[in-house]
Length: 85
Image (cartoon, rainbow, N blue to C red; front, top):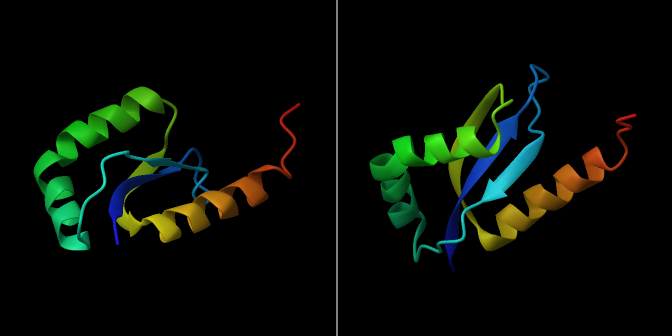
């Protein structure tokens, strides 16, 4: 099983995540993924802030591909019902 770093992003104080960004580098274990986040977290934080400057907060977590896909589908389902105009 492969694991990926996922940034879960919130744009307001709702407490729900509004977006997810999956890093493309796979890790062989969840532990190696977490070690990478611990060692490179400051660089990952900078990347998230560049990609999502309006973010209120975010979390960097390690997920399997299946977990990440589930989160993305849930976010899509929730956000497709929003009206932005």
